[in-house]
Image 1 (cartoon, rainbow, N blue to C red):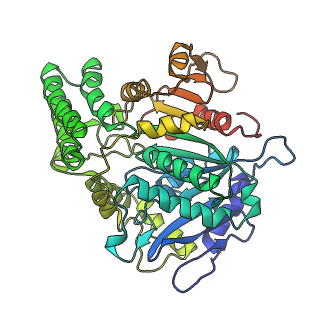
Image 2 (cartoon, rainbow, N blue to C red):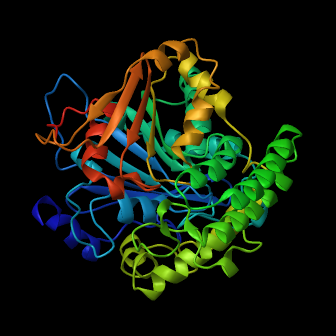
Length: 456
């Protein structure tokens, strides 16, 4: 158990402070954790959970970093999924995770947008309807946490996102930079990492058919059918018909499922539902038909509850530890989060990445080799659309192979960098890269945050 024996004890014993029925801010007794709610708008409450690393390196020339993890969905819980399923100190059995990113940085998990996970709104009119609104809410949260805490201000903040969280990361970073420049936010933004991120929906849906045809998962008939729907989506996006494009996206997933016999969208080497680690969007072709991502979230909660997994602990021991209001159910408003954002779901944010690069912000993109939903083929396509002045030099740069430890006999991935842009190809990983390749991902995060921690 090592350093995390204390965390497990605090998980069961520590109680937060209260203001009314809502935990405003709390600390574990040994000071290793803090959590609470921020009212980002009247009656809109966002939950956060900060872990302080026991591996912190003091008296270094490099400051100890903080990572803000943003989950996808929209409507998936970072406090739950990213924390217990991927990179936090404990897994869903509440056992220590050896590959926790706390080895490289402090970790801040946020249930974003409001309505996700433990976050909630008191009025359904308060759900966000655009990525920009979500970014503004997150900026408000950061102002509340950092402006009042000089210790937090000493650590650069690195935003790391997964899936749809990548769109939130871009809009948050732009809003945060604006707030920093205006003197409204006291923090140093270290960089943004986009992991298997839904940056350009058009490029991803166009990649699905050709990729699956190349790996023998669909045939020419399937390719023709999928390309037909993908081209319809492309046209809808170009004409600004984003809600219609979201509906067509659901239609395309049904076509892909039918011709591939239910391929797992998060690992194209497997069937949907065959891997308990991969959080799959489809459990059966019947569940796919006519569904949206809200259906995925509902099935996810049901499947985890059935196995006594994440849903059980988030609405059980974790909810009790954090003193979440009794009338708040973890994930209870997640379906509405997606529905309200359906008009932004298919909008690209490539121009936002360009803006960050032009401002000199460090941007890292990483992608799992066997992901389908945000396939590397699609990621490379949108990267090549960047208007960033360094793009051509980046494209002409050779890749560097990645290994873990002293083992040079097994290539784990590749890296390519030019100035403030970095791209990682992670081999053998699906959509949830830290789960599939924890070692090389931990090294990548150490390089991204310039962590003073010893390399693994």
